[in-house]
Amino acid sequence: MRHQALRPRLAALALLLLCGLALLLGPAPAQAAEVLQVRSGQLLQVGDHNRTYTVELACLAIPPGGDAAATAWLRNGLPRRTRVNLRPQGTHGGTLVARVQPLQGGDLSDGLIAAGLASRPADCSPTA
Image (cartoon, rainbow, N blue to C red; front, side):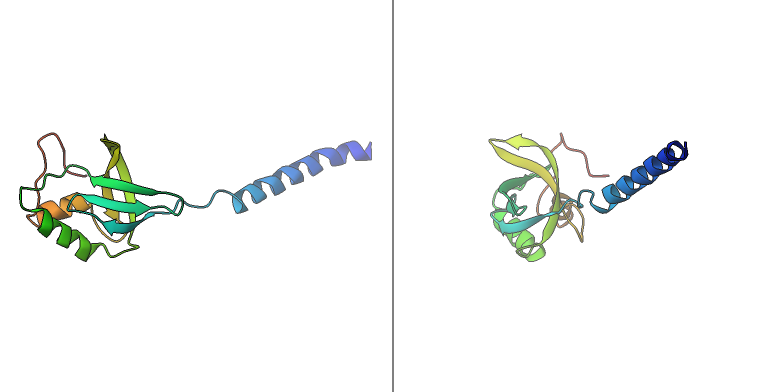
């Protein structure tokens, strides 16, 4: 009879230990991608330690002849290995189209627009 009274306590203790282990050994936080190369005023090469992606900046229109200035602006603000968050918006010809935001800054498309190096297409809304 004494063993039957001990069973619920042991089951509760085992459950508590399992919950504690699950919290300690749970999934690690997601890591940001890193900029590997600025290819142009609208294309970046990024990597996430497993893969590399070509990413086209979303909601961005660079005027004719303005690519060199936009590329220089991006290279100045995005040194190699800058960590960025990607917010995918779709694909364009097999290239990922995404909003790109450095961990220490705002959306890159918005920055290029604010610098007067690009404009926002009519079918895109500003980031909130």
